[in-house]
Image 1 (cartoon, rainbow, N blue to C red):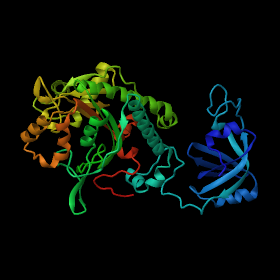
Image 2 (image 1 turned 90 degrees about the horizontal axis):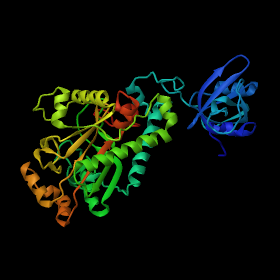
Image 3 (image 1 turned 120 degrees about the vertical axis):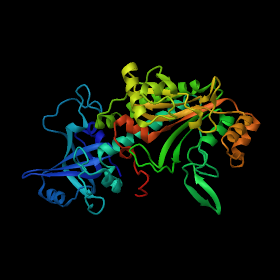
Length: 443
């Protein structure tokens, strides 16, 4: 179809063009009717004065798909020279033009209107109702804006790591052993053998450090955790990276800082309209993100000194501290107890009870987990023995460490949680196209 998009209309002033999209809204007055057409870039106003065309508009239902051919004209009161698609420095913007003398051609049967109004500024339906009708709820500008931000964040992640000589990899999502010592996995029958949906690409990205030194992956991970909160999903998108020849976890933290800055810069560049729709301002990433040892984090959060992990309330307190003391939306917490880290985590040589691992909190919520890994075969055998774990389920993974692996480490960012914190969404499901959680397996 020879069509143009709504944001291109200002560059076709006076020309006859064809646009196509969904009937967003109809406004019927005595002497004139307005058809508002929605496409992927925005809205087009179509002015209808011809009685036959008006009768056609009256029969259309919202969300019906149509093509409209008409002449591009300035709206009443619009001024400026057409120099660019964007409305800057006197240029005509897409909201200052309209189509007149239209010919409307349906591209399908009349649509059944959805159970909520998509033309309103905000969706008034409850979140469960939106999720039940996700294919149409996602058409609303506030819902699709979050997904555009998500896409831009992934593009920024890839670009930042490509620029640092990382290689993108793709690893299996059906695995023979769990990554996190057997907990919270989805088991399945793999041709008569037990298998699991991968909790992370952790083992594979470590092995690929032995091939490319620096690798990353964007892909789904699966957690059979019976959480029913606004921050957990059973399937989410993980942005993983692993790099070799590190001194310790601080090298990993430095790369993560650059990646976050790149992601947010790309979101600003590519998803500016989406950010504006949601009223979101991209935060600055400090040149040096404040960092706290776990023991200091407990003290600042007002938690008992023997607390083995940070609760959500502790994370919120640390986020407030970072913003108050450093003006930062981000804060690193390093040195988590080894008992709370996976067996492949490298201990702190000076304090073996604590790890060379870290979490990054974004606005008071854990966003990233990472750290330095063990890289010697004998260290893995000792770590598994100390936890009473058998070696055999990890034999294929451990074998690579017999053949030489460099000191390495990495991190994983939860994409949906990142977008939720960035946009201020109260529930991670608001920024997920088709969420999978404790209760939802459709649509």
